[in-house]
Image (tube, rainbow, N blue to C red; front, side, top):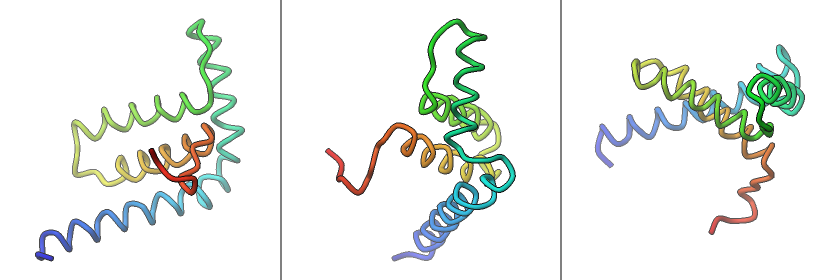
Length: 103
């Protein structure tokens, strides 16, 4: 593996490690369980927009927010960490269990 590939792999691992820490420890301690927060956001945004949103769809919309930020500043690691964290929350909220395999 080249030095560049090794560096890229290290960045991927660190991004996932930080997202894991944020989703399982840091954010939950500060903001509460994702199920509660995303559920509340789904209710609020549903009322404001006049459509029904699920908590998993809230995760997708939050990923969109971070995507827009990363588009303008791809070197800001927080955007990538948050996208990975929102994706993990969305998977949990949507019942997408990766342990069951992918098809």
